[in-house]
Length: 113
Ligand SMILES: [Zn+2]
Image 1 (cartoon, rainbow, N blue to C red):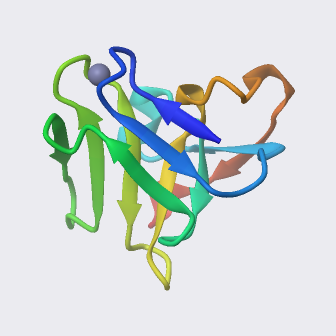
Image 2: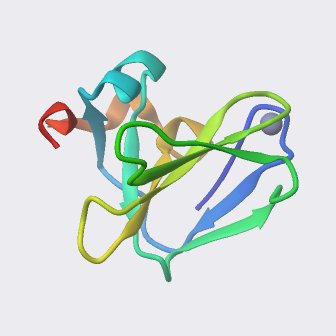
Image 3: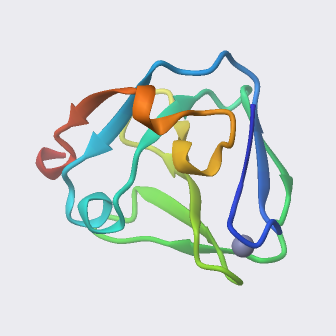
């Protein structure tokens, strides 16, 4: 499955089956940006293009690196070090193959991390 930002400069690929669940997090950042994400291991996630336009936002203890397109502003993925081993979370809304209306939503209590 592939995902891309709005302007198409940032493209990522996830080497796994389409998820049937989407994670919504209640942390101060995810709740504001309306994030619906899923997880991929470091091996499953690949940034195909857009490294040169990617920007990174860190907050709090700086343990997650939130990547977004510097051109269109869409958040595509983040590098997550809250879990061991670290992994990537990617934005399911960036993936054309994913029908958001069919996902079972799982709520993540990121506010307590
Ligand atoms: Zn973009």
